[in-house]
Length: 109
Length: 117
Image (cartoon, rainbow over all chains, first blue to last red; front, side, top):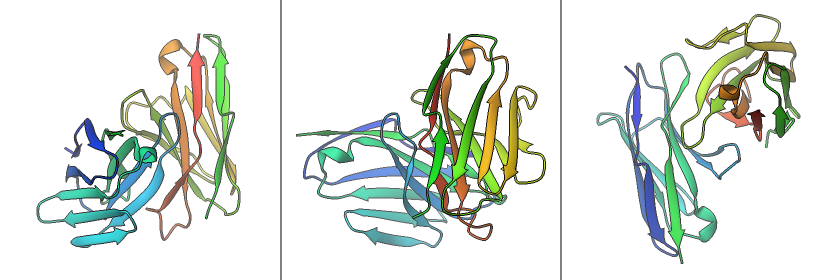
């Protein structure tokens, strides 16, 4: 079956660094996405990885290892506005997004 | 960037009535749109793929007669929840890819919160 696993909730301190992990098992693979979703709002796109390695985009970086079925989202210099849910999603062989349940990130001052 | 709008942003309706939700791509044409449902603290669940000019493709377990989808133009798809029940209360989100070639890059509407009393 298809499965996306990520932690339910994480807590971090303002100014610190946090890494949100995601493991996936999907029928075929065409890339791994990370989305940010604030409460009551629709998701917004953060990153897309299809090749192994680290993609850096400002304070956010995303890593992919296809052989391990593993990705992480790294957030640096955390700000209070980064408090949100972070959704990992895998694009399967039919180009359908398979979504994880999301990781609720709580930032404390 | 590309913008997708939804209307209404929230709606409260009585059990047994029908509710229509509109999804519009504002500055691009979308031959395909996706409808998702999200319950509190849960992931997005794909309900159906809406195709302009043809019938929608529904995911397993989603009743096509209950969730009517009409993709009448390249910029508009509608989802009608018929004979709504309290268990249909949820956050409904539509998305559209910028192009058929880049179907993975989806732009999401702001969502519609439906409450059925």
